[in-house]
Length: 111
Image (cartoon, rainbow, N blue to C red; front, side):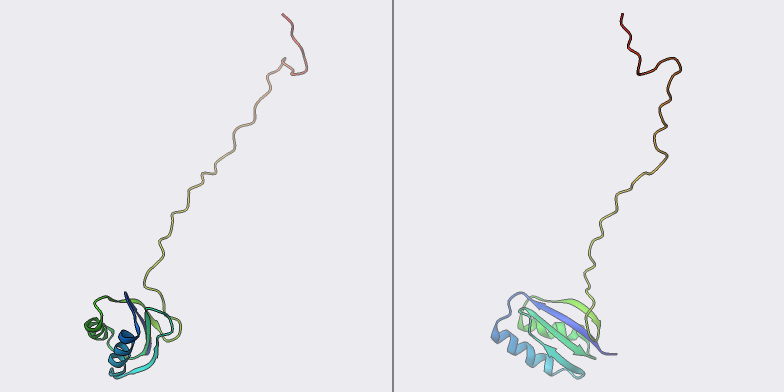
């Protein structure tokens, strides 16, 4: 099954890009290489991603796998942190105020 792996670099200049392309092309099973985004390298095919990461780290010290997924759109490894929903307590509304007999709000009392 083919999968897409996205590698990310700390610094990705032209010389590093050429060396990375050369290393990735040597792997059997690689079908597509994409370096359109700055600092990211997308590789599609059937290959061992950990051995490829190890060889790419010889070129640049900081290489990280940011996404792994099936062919097409890669699924992100980093899951967004879900904020807990605030709990809303919905009970019975306040009891209605009872009018006391004999006291009307229309009456005026003068002492």
